[in-house]
Image (cartoon, rainbow, N blue to C red):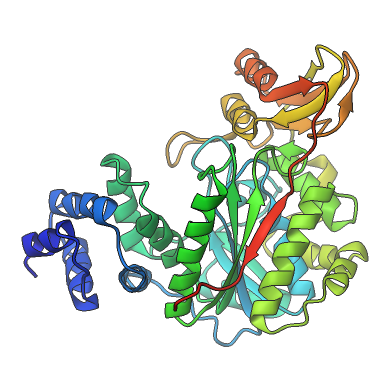
Length: 430
């Protein structure tokens, strides 16, 4: 491997062979190719792009750079990924819902880096919950319960971790092939044969326009196709927070209410849509009415209880989760219709309260957060509560209130945007 020739080829707009990508990436992992040469190649990719075949090869090599979960012996192993949003607690609802429909959800998930926590942060707000399991326990729980979610191992796609850290330091994050390969390398290493991607669009999402999101979804579906996986994507709106709760323990409580048939309509709708798509991809019955019945009649909640108890959590603790003791409210400064909620601003407010982390390994406060009393399109009276704020002895409260006030737009009229923009099931030309 001549690293300079490899970099020059991409700078010139040429496509790489799989063997060359493998040699370059493994040379980097072995320490034979230095950071500065990999950084130069990443910049060339940002400039010149990659073909669908190149992106699939890069992803496959990254996925196989470390541990690959073997889910072959599990019935209908499926997976779900979200590109991230504010109030996004869908995994807590979707995983037991899918298990109640005959699928197996056995996956590794991450802690959040940013203004709100990740799935593991939410789960760890449950007293006693064990986020780290050995391999034998992981597979046994998957077989017996149908749901197991553990913290992401550093052995899972380690090449992605190294490349992402370098991309973050060299302004090469915003490249479609690199974004798609980063996400899908971990999904391929996760072992599931069928998966659904919840690709967020809007102010509270990584990508802001439907065109960008559609292109990313199609790129990830193409990677799955090349790897022999059945992948579907749902483009969902993240202009306002999903549900009403934002904050780790608060989101767990809202997810439980959804599983008990009492959750917010948008959260239930998105989970039903995602479930329909991934069950169809896996070959299981996927009539929406049947899935909805599992949610409304408590079968998904029963599976949730079994899952949490299997990982050490206390099944009777939902209403007694530790919440921050401070309570404040932001009220409407005039009468009107809630025409918009800046999801990013709400997420940043929760981060300032202590609910997110700015660097890996940083402690977060799982008890802080906000609960929305109104959603876009609702009529609001003057002085009516817009949001309740859970804070720890006033930490970040003043700044959080200022952000929340800017996030809520009161006007004479307004209507909510559609939650689900479209489902993407295939990419033409493959």
